[in-house]
Image (tube, rainbow, N blue to C red; front, side, top):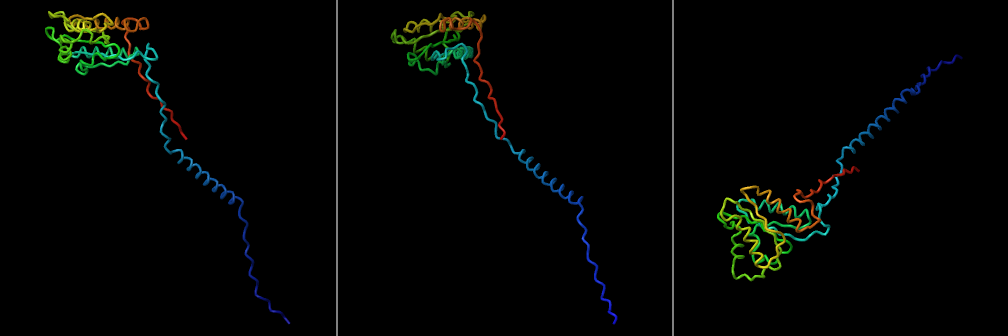
Length: 247
């Protein structure tokens, strides 16, 4: 017998092995993607706004040449018609603060005359003469009160004062208000701390005032004051410094 040949068997499929180069490329691609994602995340975090800068406390203002404990209060009263006496009062207040006084400058209208006897510390009067020996507008009430003959001689016994007058030698009654306030306060019992100063607007009134206030500081501060006529200014507090803190 002859056997009938069977149908030829289908050839088996042959699956080739993956190429090593392909495996390496896939691995590298994965690493690159992961690295890129990590770098992107770091970049986004770095773009976040840093916390606000921390302000360091500024150093306190230091009074040059003053005792650490201070010298106490000082009141500066001005009677001004054109503003010169007011400007002098501001200058004197600043210099007083440098020397340790808790100084204030007031228009004479701001202090009721009846309260003058209770003023603590030195009280400085800067009075201009208006016209032919008249008080300035803001000195009228004080002048009326102090000139009242019914005032008791010792009613200002607790007051310590110094006075500077602003006038002009071209007028007949030169510096009458400065001379009046010095004499009247003394008559009412107040204690004079420094000689009366007189400024002449027909000459160099700024130099007159500078010379007088130099003698005033010597009288009030003694040998602890700085050189006569030396211009001083309050020491400014330094600008705040900032330290940036990045988390």
